Image (cartoon, rainbow, N blue to C red; front, side):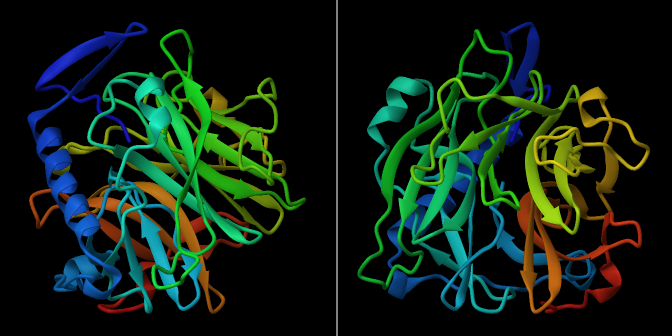
Length: 363
């Protein structure tokens, strides 16, 4: 998630110009209102989302759910969950990937450490969560930041279940995982958690500055394996963020966003991809160019009313892979919405969206 478009006002940080617009502020407020509404609902009073989606957008994967920066889908019992940017980290759940209902937010009060770590963050408004099931609990990572700065932190919350009706349901704040500040050349936002084939736990993150980073985590604590452990550089572009790592066959695939989010129908987000036999890289595109050197094969971009896709995720169901992201809906004044798209793999092992599998209500 970035906020660096011309418009409302600008700040200077590390000689990089950032800005945010009146539209973006409206989007923040709209998401905030939706997020607080989600917090106010109990599990028994969940709001079913209307799936009144036009045929054209249904064929582009629209699920009729208003979200920004959705997590990858995670399953708990018979329900699939996503978490997304907003007050307290709001959620939705579904039993069929078509009809979605609001779930509870992770936090109703700000974790105590966040005010000191990122004083400019207000409203317990947290960005771009990601979640993984590991052992007997769910680990949810989220970003605490403020627009246009790299005074940022990634936090961790854990829960033995995602089912609010389960007596064991309770989110526990586990504190700070990694932090960046004005003296650093990276930005600790947009966390993406993954396991490698050896069972090691990793966290990718980063936005603008020097690009996408990767650190190893301790699977027992969910925190960085050591305060001085290596921080790997995976990818760079002048406008890069929203990384996601997925293992398929013999490779790890690194998805990243180039361009600008949060501008509604003027958003320029597009998704690029590279792969590596090692989770730590180097990641190369289809032409063999290292993503650190500006490489990145085009994967998904704007198409008609489907504008600026971002924040990648992959979910497998019954042998089929589905790609998740948000996009800006050209038929709804650029509101960010959830997309779920059929994902295939080419003969040489590269991911590709197969829209021929889409039809209204498909899942």
